[in-house]
Length: 447
Image 1 (cartoon, rainbow, N blue to C red):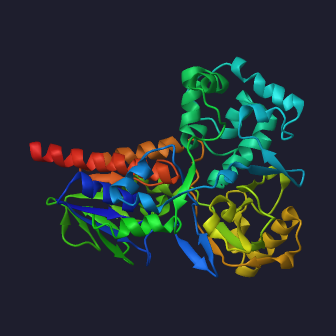
Image 2: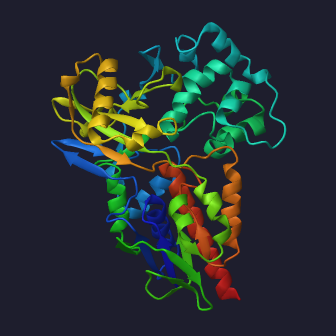
Image 3: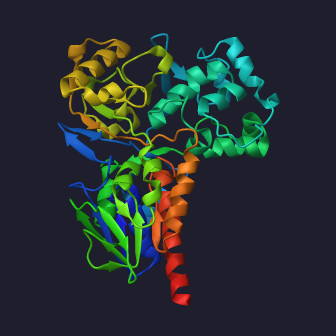
């Protein structure tokens, strides 16, 4: 059995690794067009600082990423976030305001007015949504929780997770569990009470690795479960009578897994997917810039802060990276990472390095009440296309791509363009895809 995986990001690597374990003896080739695997995930050291180019971790409450670490037998590399990282803030009226992480703290918080809090308490009495119209996160939030909750809570959360626009993103596609809770319980508050959830945030502890998230990519790449070809972009996947033939491949493949961004898939020629190129191109990928700074210890405490769009700031927020994972900074300096761009700030795509650093330092200095010369830039990472945006109606794109792939036996599609943008989403999809590949071969042998 010979399998090709196109795309060497976390989705492709995890799928290849799990498939190799599911089907011992299978010959698996992974093709990545960039010089190094990992996509937006990489970790770099500079003057004692450990910096991330993309995701800073994953939540331990979902099992699939941890299961892969177990399968790698690398549990000793895991690094849970510091307990102090539970302290999170948002910006309101130009000031940093603590974000309540437990329901009872919510009532003493200044984030919402008394009227805004009362509106949330009315949530159990709001009728359940009727019909199958795909709501945006803002539409859902205003209907169930009120305008203030959307402005000061949902908006910055969506900005932090998706770098997205709460008025455009689909609730069911971006946060399917919240959609399911309303459908099942009729109320989010009733669901929390029945599930006895003590925290308002997703379950689990933020977790990374001693050497950063890039360590997961490195461990997968050298796992021996597959052969990795970097600097090798596949442009064509053609189905022939004997199997699949790739323009950059090594012979005939029995199955192919496509794990590339939507825009890359649209540019490829793939048997069976010709009719979905226009849908794939419609998935937006806004730009992002990650600008880390060295800050004297004592000015960055907790997880960091996010900025609601109503504040009209030029940055999305900042992570207190060494407050989350202490080994990210030095003995004298903390590492603070500023995020710019996203779906509301496409101008970042045209900004040069100096403009990005200048903008990030000016905004950060104001929030930390420091002079700009007290911030030292220690790196910059930018992505012209970053996180895929699941706009309202995104499920139709997913359905169309799945149907097209299903029409070609042995062809499979995965990746964060379709099944969730988080690390755990990608690893869950990897297990599901590996099971589909295994099922395909079992049925083929039974014929």
